[in-house]
Amino acid sequence: MKTLLNVIWLVLAGLWLALGYVVAGVVCCLLVVTIPFGIASFRIAGYALWPFGRTVVDKPTAGAWSTIGNVIWLLVAGIWLAIGHVLTAIPLFVSIIGIPLGVANLKMIPVSLLPLGRRVVPSDRPFA
Image (cartoon, rainbow, N blue to C red; front, side, top):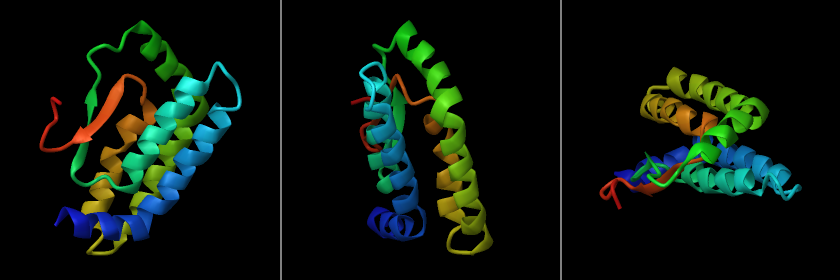
């Protein structure tokens, strides 16, 4: 079932969302200081491309620097990526088959707003 949902997700929303995260990652990697933002963006691009069967958990070793970085990310790219998730979720909710995908899309908004200090792990091992 996860594979079927992931394939439908990839066609209807995942490709466009992952492309947005990759563009944000490339822009962030242009400067040395913002490379951690780019790495986080690439990590979330993979999650946005194939989300079912995986989940996002907080990284226990994340400290104050990830909080400061999240505030910067929120102002620079997080808002725009969250708007992309909302705009992608609206047409998914219009169709009957897309309702679960729209819900999954809205569940990705917190990680798009605050990506630093988080990890993407398989759903069957959320504490791995």
